[in-house]
Image (cartoon, rainbow, N blue to C red; front, top):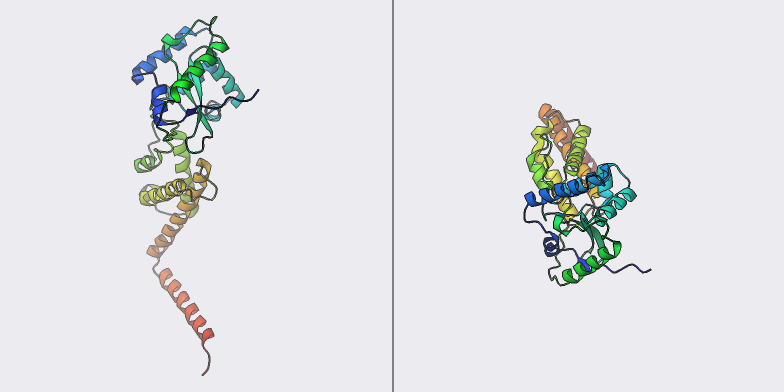
Length: 286
């Protein structure tokens, strides 16, 4: 059987229309009601997935963009298990999964997983797969009428507490594209590793200017697609490490010269001698 064409285009208006909650408080009450209603039916893994979707659905109330792989990594489960759990939650009308496509190339992107209001639940006996499919078709017809196709894919928008040792300026620079605490922590870890490799005596906390320059250069390169390894989080980490290491090595040279100014004089003498030697080699008799 041929796969059904994806009709919904990922855009800000789409996400707003998918959201059915007026505020976070209403969303919180709905999730609690779902867990109370299906208390005897939901497994620990199913509850954990629901809680995770709840946490990562703050910007567009109740709408999460976590991929199955991301959920699996965060919970330490297999992707296949997460797919089964999401399908079960959808059968119970706790969530609804919407396949999405990008406006830029009309290719499939991550699904939007939407937590459903309590009043939309049906009895388990009457909630058949056929009813789910019909509901999907109705949603697709409505969402096809949206005209705003500006793609805005924001994952992990839930506000979390970041480690205190990470500078606020660093978090502010990274957060718009990678707001998840784990991602910010890993990126700062690359900066710290580059610092340790450079053997600087100055504490990392006193080198915030270099840290921000490194992450700013890396984020700009990612946005401009100038990273050879591609447009991805992993490519950004590798590029950030290389950039930070180069900047810290430059600072290490400056630090060495401050401790022993003679190093700079010897360096300049060496360069001068090489220049004179080269000029002599190029000289010819008249």
